[in-house]
Length: 410
Image 1 (cartoon, rainbow, N blue to C red):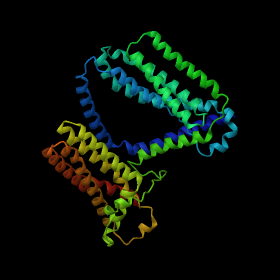
Image 2 (image 1 turned 30 degrees about the horizontal axis):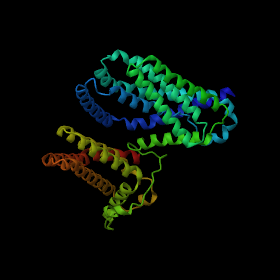
Image 3 (image 1 turned 120 degrees about the vertical axis):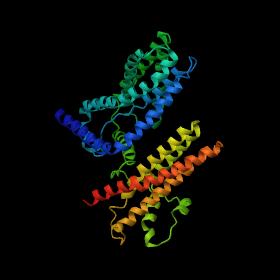
Image 4 (image 1 turned 135 degrees about the vertical axis):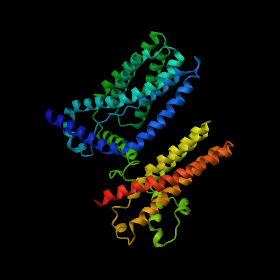
């Protein structure tokens, strides 16, 4: 029986890795890596300049403890369960302790990378204020990983409780305890205070470890959480490529009918389809809205004209790049395939829709500058964005669509 459980675990891990690799190769392509390197380089430079302005009165320990505490409290357990497991694995519940123990540890391994990156990013701020030096990084990392493991185990114990209120309260308590312990350590507080918080955390762990023994697994809850976790990954992957397992929601949005109104000529067929999909389908409209709002907020909060224009161009690129999968949305619809329309019309219609969407986004990016009275800067940003949109649609997009069409007809 134990061999069967081990084989199930190994099979689930292999399937999960294959699923990740299938989409990650599209997500981290050359274009995205270039944008990420550019964005991270700019962010690192800005962050480094900001750190130099800090003085010892800056609450670096408090901010660091709050951020790390939030990430520590966010501790999902990757169970890799499927819907059918509620039936076929129910009889093996007593034999699955090893399976779920491995789930906790592999969750720890995946999430440790996030903790490492966040702690490394926050260390310059902490060192600049405290003066402790970077030698404290590895002791702090060991502490953070220990607290992460505590969070994962307590979270697993709480998953035997069905009540949503219990889960919410537990998340708040784990955040407060994790952040408090980090704050005391970062602030060089008295050892007795640190030990008191550590004792409370140990007591909290032991209490739920004992009470959870009397409760059965909540299979429906575990399966639902696993489905939600994978759904989040598919939504991110869908920004870069088509994800068959992701079914987007379609919303009527009658108040936007003026955008999708078009004549009923044959030449407007694909334009009509693409416009309606962009406006009414949640994954595309949500993506466009989020990137537009984030870009506008960053432009409004920045005081540097160079940063403003680079931010506008970066978010224009991200929008155009991630809306490209919309092109193939109707490729497998039989009623579209029988249209007496040329492939060139489809390509030109999509190119125009995407170009117009980027133009509209360009106009929105100038609004924060106009609100701040930066008229000349707004005109320059608008012209730069218009030129970029034209170049994107006339050169990059055309080559990308040719590759997509050639792969479809192979």
